[in-house]
Image 1 (cartoon, rainbow, N blue to C red):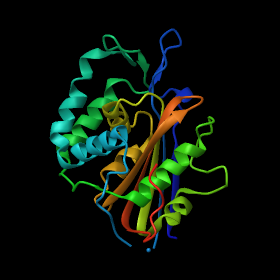
Image 2 (spheres, rainbow, N blue to C red):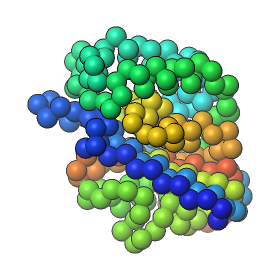
Image 3 (tube, rainbow, N blue to C red):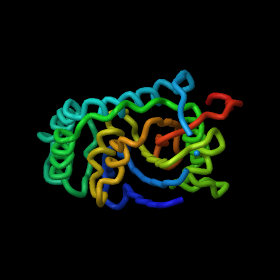
Image 4 (cartoon, rainbow, N blue to C red):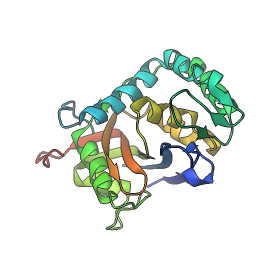
Length: 237
């Protein structure tokens, strides 16, 4: 294992979150990236729920057409009032950086070359869903109740090689809302979630989504440069 990087972003620390007087919304994100060694991929995505497929499709739209995706972010600009994002009919989101983070993300997307779409992986999706199921009681973070780390869970369903990463989004998934907020990465030094999403090394990904006792809902996205599925596939979720 060559590198271990962890960045956690708490909604209560000023990330995109709701004002208490409005209904709950917001996305709390965490990122974990690791490197080491293992193999490659699977294209059957029938095991993904409709929401999970939409998250993957949205992510792939951003990867394959970043200039187009920049325009989705540009549509947010008129609704900033200082550090508040105030869109009609939606909760008010409080940001750390205000429109500056959105403008920086727009510039990134307009300057970024397209990268290939991620191929869905059954094993990575099962690993992601296992962590979602484990945290339905309100737990948070990358460590499972059995002390497993993301690479442990990924290894239960296949073999990974070179580099893997995990993003977790808690709370209120519109699918575009999850992806745009990970891309903007408000208040996160180095925009590590965004870098993860546009890393050209990653070829495969898995998605798991479900309910969360404290933050309403959550989505886990697991990425790998290479991944080989177990021949004896676990049951779909």
